Image (cartoon, rainbow, N blue to C red; front, side, top):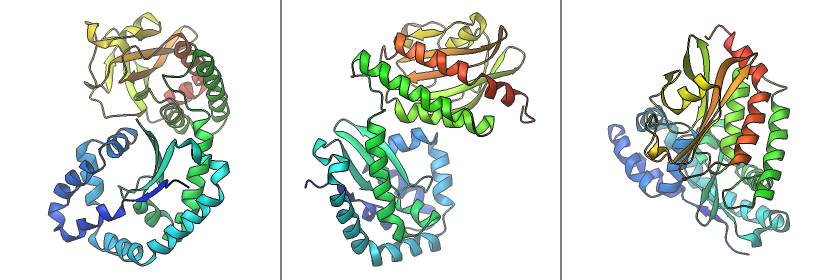
Length: 326
């Protein structure tokens, strides 16, 4: 069986040889060993460099010392169990497809697992720091097993730019049904956060996904989002692509943002954008804004899928706009 499991935790624990005031320096160098992993980690959790350091410095040396001692004591045994369980799931995981690997990478403890797409396939990232905080290291085999099973299910729904229109349309329909199930439960804020998470998770060319809501005058205010932090948290109607979509109540599909004179740049990585208004009783409630690092990323299938999604979230947006938070 090909090796799909690698332990990179040893790259992190030298942080304990540094004085705490030097931990930020260590973190910068540490991320360079896993550039694709941490680029995606920061994007998915909307972390600026300052926020990353703030989270890192919230850990005490005692906490990381305890993790290291427990990890050093048990990791060989636990990895042996992990490999045995992966072997038992060989057929179910379809390992011969060689489309994923499992990496143990210590990070900031925000979540136990994450899927990261690379040119060679996906990394199923497992964070020992999060496991240590939320459970105990004995749970590592269970967490790896569940994450790999989830990845195989995830891979059957994932929408990529390379697939045929027929397959893309099918997967958008499956994803829309999943979102339809979500909108019937949870609070409006939780729902909008869940929706942007689902879009980011299952559509690999959606690199920034967020809701803007209009609760006072003709101004769009940033609400739930996934992606790099943005300075554009309040956008007047008519300003930029988002403002134009709100003022005209029209879907804006921009194949190349570099040729748009009224484009508000959020990131130099952004190459194309789609903005879909959320309208109820002829009133603009807000919009869904999605950026891609790919040029000409969006087409009529995206337009149709996202328009249907925006209709689904209207009740949640109305509730959100009426809460005391606004």
